[in-house]
Amino acid sequence: MGGSQVNKALFALYSEARKGLEPVLAWAKLTGNSELYQALRGRPRIAIPDRVAAELAAAAIAHARAAHGPGSVAAIAGSPLAELIGTVLPEPPIPGPRSAEWARAAYVVLWGAQGRPSPGAPWVIAGRYRGQKVVAIGPHPARLSDETLVVRPGTDEALARAVGHVLLKEFFVDRPVFTDRPELSFLVRPGGGELLGPAGRLSLLGEGEPAEVLLHHPGGVLRRGVPVIRVDGEPATTVFDLMLAEYGVARDGLPGSWPGGYGDPREPYTPAWQEAVTGVAASRAVKLARELGVTAEKTGGQVAILPGQLEPDALRVVLALLRLTGGGWALPPAPRVLAVPGAPGQLAIPGLARPGPAGFQPEVELLIGPGDDCDLTPPPVPLVSQALAALNHQAVESV
Image (tube, rainbow, N blue to C red):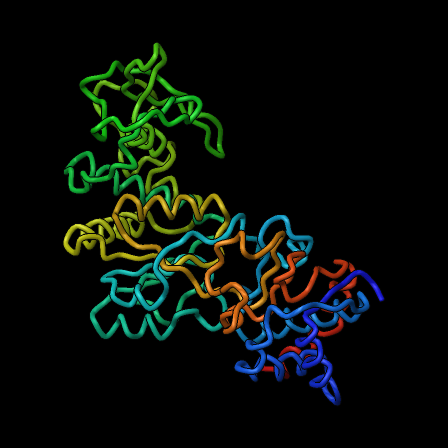
């Protein structure tokens, strides 16, 4: 029979739908009857041949991509199917407000390719009626945005760094607006990143002694200065001071190599530096940062970012912008097909409820993983790949 296992009730429904229909159309019919399908989630599993399991997985993947866009199929790092699926989440998504909540934000950034159709589009429209501004950042223009910043693929981190550079300079150093950021006031070892406890203030400038630190970035090593104090005989600075050094925000009395201004293209991470990397004009990066900062200042942090398909490093830097402004993190809809490396009960996956009388929530239509609560154990990757190649032509017909 093979080593694959599938939810017994789900497989019975699929087998019934498969009569007279191609696999992708059968899966579309199966998931179209959402109430019946969801009621049978989390039931005992049975063994099926690996090729049949691969066909079922491929049908679900092909249909989800065609109907809901490439971001609707994802894998968490560690799943055997991660390389095949391509959209890999380094960890379960970061908790935050769902799309219904970011309709109330005054300023929304759709950052990264959002798939097809754009997730949360009704909430964008609802927010627009309230006067919300929407800015899209990605490789292609967006239909629902007031403005679009078209960045070169894979360069989102550079733009986010430049936006952070402007926010830190204008809203923290030149004019201290966002002073209540306790997570930035922790003491940290400059070299090792070890948190030592709260300092009670954002910066040690004027109190600590100047010291030069080495900061790594994609182009090499930066030499920048931070104020340090001694804790147990070892130097320590604040997360905020270290962040200013990393982002290249100069302050008097500190050693190192610093940008001469926003127009300096030689030093990371100025607006001019990012322009050469991303293709986004330096003035647009400055404008985005100022709009985020001013809106957050006037509304008490009513800004939100909806992340699309971003590299892990870019995702972390974008999240840092929200920490600076006090804004919200708008999670995209959960994937329709999700491959996980372990039991789902150990993962904080939006849209996925534990099995119970009501079954799973409907966002995740097929959960592939080794846990007993998963719908399907991962079939051999070569078989899924072969099945996908054979079924892709059916996907358009299923939409």
